[in-house]
Image (cartoon, rainbow, N blue to C red; front, side, top):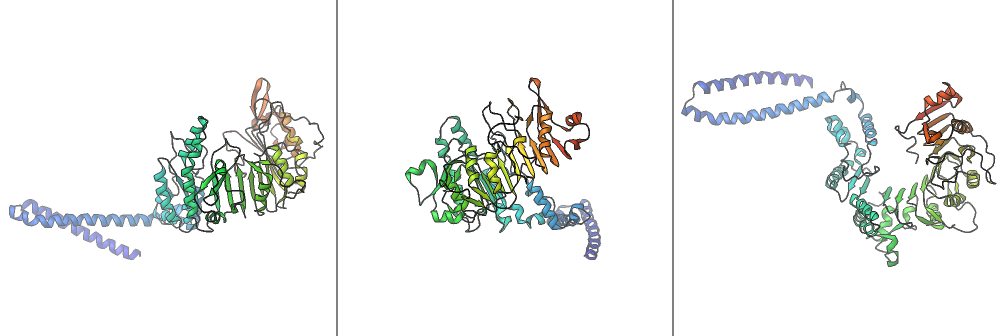
Length: 533
């Protein structure tokens, strides 16, 4: 390979020198022997030679490009010394850090709309080797964003067309959003008019219809639907062309597909995340799920919820904030719902009455369970459930309550003895009162044993003295303490951030007096455990 290159290069150098000399001789001949007859005779050949020179330049440029590509692919370029599979893994890590433009909070600011994401396209434009690796990794191109009714629609559409081709047979992650719909809903809210909300379903419905109608059987694994309709307590259910009925119109959105086709499209789904609009409660969409998120604070009967959950006994993740109306069956035992594989139970948005009913019906298996609550974790609420579950991680979040109602101190939480991680979020953070750390009275508040935790997280919490803060830490004796955006209230409603210098000013430099490992973070730093669910 190199020998041929050297021989060709030497020949080219010799020929180029001879060619340049010949061109110089031609120039001299034209200067000193120019007359009318010779000019007419030479014009054609000289013009032809000019065209040939341009073609030679093009070939030299092509050779230069190939040599540069060879140089860029050599292992002495540090990044290219890595195996192709390692580079592909790095590309995936870069892609994972890029926020999806259609899922980011407050994603559509019409004064400053989002730009089409840079990756993975930019990675494929660095050099030929990177382009080869990027195009040979179909998973990089499987995330497809489609925006409707906005100036960016064509750009997103063209990008989606390219990505589908590059993803080959890789399962696609398709995100659709209608910014025009969101803007119309916001206008209707401002004018207290629900008609805009109803009329603006059309484009989103049509997009969903198209996807489901053209979805290959068994190829839909995850479905996320987020439709803002917070003004209604009842859920909007999908109805099909097979079961339209006038009396259901106010609480349904219609897909012009046969019921059999719709059910066939989403029967393979294993992950459902629904907010505002839902398949009918009897749909096969709820069968065989491993992840289910029912969000939107809508009303649902206890019987319907129990039927949905019993249709997916292999659920690993359940996130629900629905308002449960009534019990499935009066007088039945606490084993109405059995989820042996459950690993995450997120019910922090559920009202206390709903939590009380739901936990009474639920039995989980031996797997480690992560539980999130938004109510006081009292013995009356949780004691029986803890005997039927293996809660290893627990998050307690504060919710709005009457200003005269004190929040239960963490020192009085009812917790399972096997608990390893406790996260306390926003406790006493309303600016008017601080945590009640006195012992509450009442028949349901028994003396609670001290629990030794692996980790205690306190996020956006407030205490009236450092002693109370230290009392909470001592109660749980954690091996690791993480404090994020927590404060001590001082007289005259002043607040002092709990940080390492402040802690050391009180207990000295030996932080092990408080906890073997202490980490204090400010609000400017990333909030821990954002991926809890």
